[in-house]
Amino acid sequence: MKKLSATLIFAALLVSSDAQSQHDNEAVNACLQQQLASAPDSTTMQEVRSLCSLLDQDDTGATVVSERKKRQMSLFGDEFSILLHRDNYLLPLTHNTKNQAAALEFSEATELDDVEMKFQLSIKTTLLSHTPLFDGQVFAAYTNQSHWQAYNEEVSRPFRETNHQPELFVDFPARFALGNWQLNTFRFGLNHQSNGRAGEISRSWNRLYSEFEFASEQNEMSLRLWKQVSDEDNPDISRFMGNFQLNGWHKLGKHQLHWMARKSLQGGGKGALELGWSRRIGGREDLRLYLQIFDGYGESLIDYDRHVRRVGLGFKIGAN
Image 1: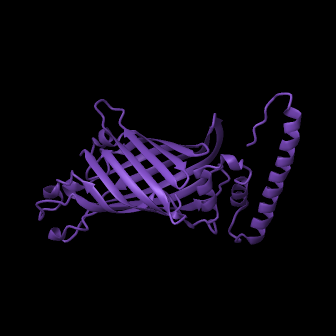
Image 2: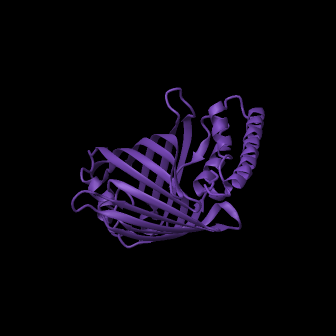
């Protein structure tokens, strides 16, 4: 929102602000009229207000978060539209020097290739866009991350590991400013993660989590905290996968930098660090060249207790 200085020029700025406020209100009203005229019958007033309220923000304070939410809101033709959730990417070339669990994972293999393909697909859908009990949106999401020995002809190019991660969560809108940073969203959810295996190589856990999303003009940050609620397959997983995770993004023209830090608060706990760089290709927001570097524990469930160092190059897909 517009910031005014309490000085002798307050009156002059107030006049300017009133004019801008009137312009903003006109834009919001025009948006409401347009959306009410063109929106499908299933669209609720809450969805229309949420979309048009995004116009009532200072353009100079536009963030990657707000831009993404505008794009997502434009897809709300009904409550079951498919939206992007986490990063979607394809890394045709990755190098991991720790692929040495062949005897455990593939009894017929003597060695796994250090070079493999990695990709992630992550989507969500709106289950409830508004409820009379609380001002929040209910989502269901699914994330699939796969590690594919695509170039390993000796063992018929197997999928070394695939992790499935369904979620159910509620997003609550938030408007709390701290300096140049603004809290945009508070999220509370239930997360299940499994590799779909059986026996000794079965890996799974369930978590209750809360997440806070912050943004400034060119930066984003999210803090996720979780509590493990089951430990049947791997009781020590929290010591390696951590209790919280920080994510950060910085937008710089066509470039975007990303970092992730995860840590366990238990004594002797492990963690992980991930760095990412992406650049728009041909001016498109939905296709980016992507470099990913990972160092630590928990890149995949089968490797949750192994220290992995991986470098991958490929493409980030979608407008996340």
